[in-house]
Length: 478
Image 1 (tube, rainbow, N blue to C red):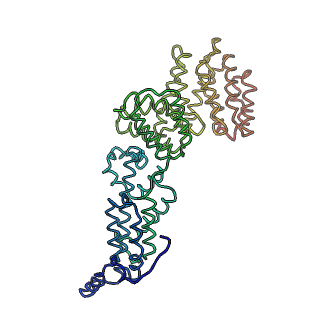
Image 2: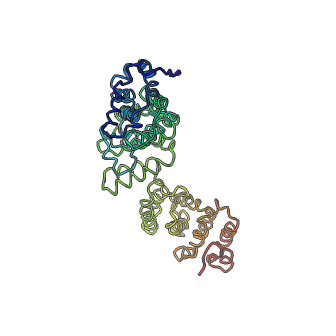
Image 3: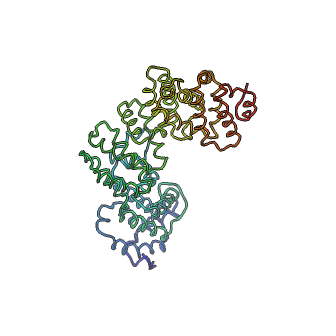
């Protein structure tokens, strides 16, 4: 369609000869008749160019394109707004076919995501429940259409919504616009295929569901390398679908085991947004009493080290419970052995400063200090060997933001009561050194250095007048 030819309307049978009679009838019965049909000159452009373009299309594109036929009828009759609506309907039907061929599970996961209504989207018929804009966005996200095609179709959808026959309007579509939109819809959608990356994802999901035998090392490494080659947004969509397969009660145990091997590598390739969305999905399982799915979902998050991405409301409860459990283990029998697993679990929820919940920070650091300072006995210097690594790691996260919480904890009776033993004071000094590591603020460094320099000789240095004066801008002293 590089050359547009204009000829008189009588030269082509595509122009409906009854059109003028219909307009005359409307006028005679007193109905509006202006701007109902396109002008004869506009219809002439359609009549001269559309037949040749349709002839050039492959038979497989035209065979079942019923709305393309309606487009031709509308365009030939001068009802351009009707024709626009018809070709858009053909686009939607084709996008639904692409979605079904690609895989409904991954498509609905990307379209509906963590919404609690996801369970209601299962079959091809459910695609009709998605709004056209959502369908379009999801096809772009999964690379069923290119970014350029998405932008073109988004414009056509906007035009269809603004000036199509389905919406009131006085705008007159001209033949050049209509032919351009037709060409975009046919060449970029009806006559197009998903990208190679999208097809790789489709094939992977299909093969993953069917492969129950254990993966060998070479296959596993090949798949993990392919993850790093995919666009990050496709990795996010793939992660959501793999999660859904893992938590499905009817998933074969062999498939679930293979997912457990592969998913840590997939998780690393994903941006944060799909990770947080999975956390919301997991919380939804708990809220809606899907006990089996929730249990499997917790396993999934443990496999990928993703507890920090669980929803804030869940993490508040879980972290608070773990803090209490850690303190109980510390004060209980054989604490050296029992502290470590709880400390490791707690660390998985606060692996970085951003994941530390403000309303639990004071209690978190105080409890960690109690465990890190230890019981003051010679054996292992009174500190759980397995837990010590995690205690230092959590204290390292304090930085400028939480350094005041750590220093203030030394004035609490639970901590200060431990400092009567010299072994505990030595461990307290080491804990402060770990906490100072990532502090940048010079005054805070000075405050922590003061405690480090004095705590072995003076267990009450955190309550001294000098320290209170030094830290007054960061700790509220009563």
